[in-house]
Image (cartoon, rainbow, N blue to C red):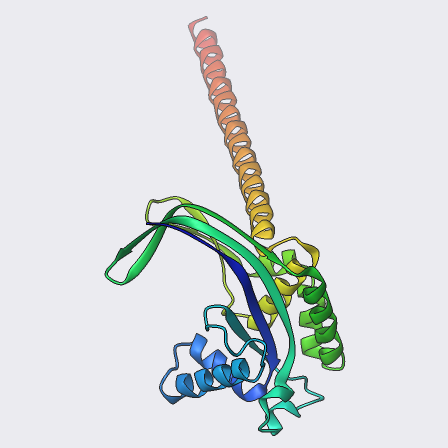
Amino acid sequence: MHVKESGILYDIYVKNDTYYQQYLNLLNDTYDETAKSFNDYVNEIHESIPSLASLSSGEVSVHVLPESATDKTSSQTSDVKDDVIGIVSTKYYFEGDETQSMGMFTYENVISNYQANEKEASALLCQLETIYEEDTKLSATVDRYSDASNYVEDFMSQGVDENGDTVYILSALDNPLGFAIATLAGEATGETMGEAMEAQSLSVEEVMEEKIKEWAEEKKREAEKGLLASMDSVDASDTSDFATTL
């Protein structure tokens, strides 16, 4: 079945140490009651914003960030509205041939476009710079990953897919705050994380090609040295035999 969809997605950014730690636990596969508590919190955040409350969970994402070391008021109050930092909206268009098998959907011939609101992303990034400016550790994270290419450089890894092709993977598990900052930075400038990954991938491949060339040249020089040494040995042997014959 061919499907076409378009609309607006919303990303809500909040700060709360308690639920940020629960989020880290979930990333490390620590479920049980933590998952229920965290999901309840995310739903409560979603429902606390009247303009978004009627939208489905597929249209609204909640990103939980840590609090600054100098301000822990968010996790000390029960009102989740205190936790909300800001919202970024993204216009999207998607179409493709949809196939369902065993409850799983797959798509072919996909055409998609996602365009985040640059002004909203830029404003939110500035808010985070202000929130964390007195926290030495977190302000350093904001400073570094306000350039999305730095996150790609630090956390992109190279692997091989099931077809044996080289693939590049970007993980949010090791530094979710850095990932959030880099995502916003990319949205604020119009340079997506995907584009940063592509640029870094090309850079990695160029470096590898250069190293292979250097290795090949070194092996060539070693072979030439070995050949010359062998020829010198043969020449010396021939001279010795000639002298003996005389």
